[in-house]
Every structure is written in C-alpha cells, then in structure tokens.
Image (cartoon, rainbow, N blue to C red):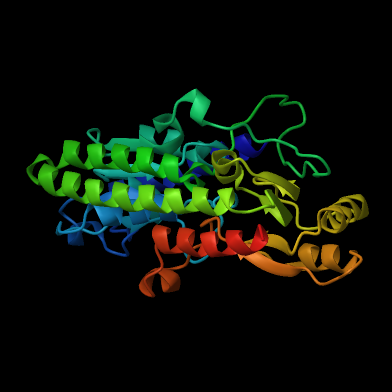
Length: 331
C-alpha cells in the first residue's frame, strides 16, 4: 500500500517536473541554487550520510553536494517536491538508499535529463549476505504500514549504521565521482584512503567497547533502526517497534514486557532514537521496579537538520557520540 502511494505521488511530481522544464522554470535544487547557478559537478543525496560522505570525498574540489532530506524530515515520511525532482534530474551523481522508502526514485530516474548520470544505490552496493531482513524481536509490535496482503520479506533500509557498510558505500561513491570527473581521480582516491582509515579506526573502538562490556543487550523504548550495528558487534536487543514502523504509541503488553526486561537484566539505560518524544521510554521506566534507568538517545541520522550541518555535525561525529552512548548503555 505504501509503495502504491509513493509511486502515485512520484508520477504527479514527474508531471510537474515536465511542466517546469517545458516552461523554463528555474526551480531551486538541493543546494538552494537555481540550475543556471550550478553548471559544475553536481552531486545529490537523498539522506544525510550519503551527503556527508560525498562532501568528505569532494574535499578540495570546487563543488558542494546537495541534500534532499533536511530540516528534520524522516526518510520514511519523506515526499520529494517538484524542486527535488528537478534537482535530481540533471545530477552527475545521485546517491540514495534504495529501500522501500525510496520507491519513488525509480520513476524519477526514468525522466532524468542527464542520461549519463551515475547512481549509487546503497543497498545494491552490498551483497545479499551483507543485508539484514527487517525483523520482529521478542515483545515487539509489528507497527508496519505495509499492505497485509504483501507477505514478503523486506530488507532493513538503515545500512549506513554499520561502519563496515560505510566503508563499502564510500568506496562506491568515490568510484562514481571518478567516473564523472576523471580529472580529479587522484584527489577523490586520496580522500577516500584517509576517510576509510578513520572509519576503520572507529570500527575498532566500537568492537573494543563491546568486547569490554559485561552486558551485551540494548533496550529501545522506540523504533529500532540499528540492526546493522547490533549484528556487526554481536549485540542483542529488545525494542517497541521495527525501524520502519510509523507507530508512536506502544500497547500495555509491549510496555510491560520491556519494563520487565529492564528489571530482569538490570539495564541502566532505555534508549530512544533521534526525533523521539521519549514518552514510551518514560512509561517503560515508570513501570520498572527501581524506576531509575536513564533515557539516552542513539542517533540514526534520519533527521539531521541544516542547523546541525552548519554547526559541523557529520557522520563521524554522530557515530563517535553513539559510541559514548553505547558505552553507558552496556555498562
């Protein structure tokens, strides 16, 4: 059902785009520029991690990538505007996740003006054994808005939350940049080498933190988009909803189950994700015996804002902060 709605919306936008193109309208692109202001290399990403990785790899190049999903817009509720479709249409490199939330991209790419565009589909960069199915763990509500008739397995979209995956996807983005801008190949490759080392170093520190922790269980009073992180480091988890759920209220049974796990496992932290109002986490803690667990946020990078970017927030800084949260949650 969600796929049908997104495809219908995209078809409307494509028609709008064609109207804009025929009328010569200069819609703003993802950089906030009109087409006539941006005649050089043009790179656009739907989500923040892809944008930030492209920005790092383009260091030293006279161009800046564009970001579609900003101002706190969650990828699961994102609907592209006509300006987004126009921006995508003449991009040299387009970076997107490729999961169910990006079903609109397929139709948009069919009408793209730049037929030489190089696309980076994050999920296609990974092999099938590197992808994880969206799953329902013990005590979790499904909260899924798929058509119930669609009895199919769905891969979890949040692939960027694995540092191993980040290295693979960054390599694919660098390859795409080299393809469209061969003159700067050496710069892209040098930037990639430096950044891959930073990702690998952070990955090592994540593993060391987990290895040194007696507790290996996380509990989320929220959605759970971190399956790639927990699988990578051998962690277990409990959560109220899957990562792509649209639910915001948990049932009494779910709250009771999660509160019981906090008591049983003596967990010091109940986690939430970015954008959460923390109400479910608070209710879980209120239903525990000790009622003294902390609420901490693990950032899934699904709602990064322009203001945060201007303040210097980036993929590495968010993952560094997540590591600090992880240390406390596993203590």
